[in-house]
Length: 224
Image 1 (cartoon, one colour):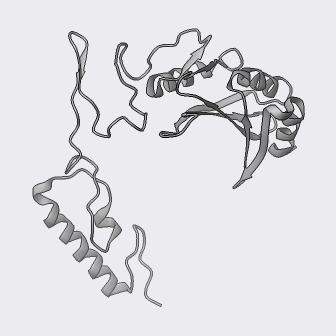
Image 2: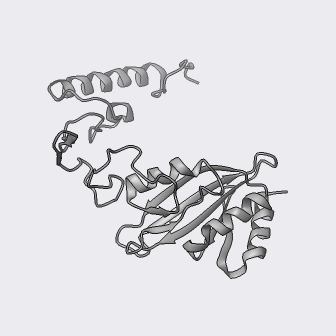
Image 3: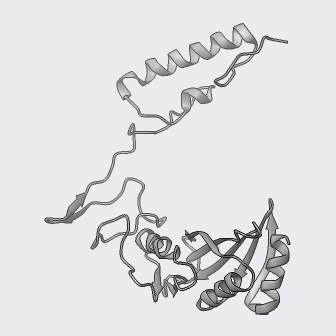
C-alpha cells in the first residue's frame, strides 16, 4: 500500500480535521487543522496505519505571518516502508500544543529541540527543558528575528555569549568572480583572500584552456 493510500485512510477517519493529501516529488503531506488534535491523529496513524517510527519533528517560523509556527511531523512505517508528513500550525500567542511523547518516545528529544530553538511548548512533555542551550538562556536562536551574528547575553557564573562577526568571518562566500570554486564557503583569511582567489581562478583558467571546460574534482576526460 502506498503512502497516499494510507493518507486517504487517515483522512477518512478524521474528515474535515485533515486537508490533503498533497503529493510533491513523491512525498505525501496532510495538514491537521487543529493543533490540539495532533496527538490523537498521530496515535491513530501509529496504531491503525503502522507508522511506528517518528523520523523527525521540526518547526518552521512563518515570521511576519499568523499562525507564526508550523510544526512538522515526519512519520515512517518500518514494516510497510511508507513515509507520511503531518503539519499543523500554532499561533505565536499560544506557542503551545500537546506532546506526542505518549505516541513515540523519540518525540521527547525532538520536542525539546523545538522548545529550545523556537520557544514552542509541548504540553504534557515529561521533561521539557533546553537541550542545546543552557537553562536560563533568554533567547530562541532559530527564530527568524534572531540576528545571524547572535545576541549578547550575560549570566554570571553560568555562561555568556557575544555576537559573532560575519563580515570576513568563518565560512563566508566571496562575491563576484566567474568561478563557483572561488566563491565557495570556507574559512577566510582576509589578508590572503585576494591572492588565493586569483590563484584559484588562474588554475581554473588553465584547466579550461587545456581541456575545454572546468571540471569538478575527478578524472578529466579528453576534449571531444
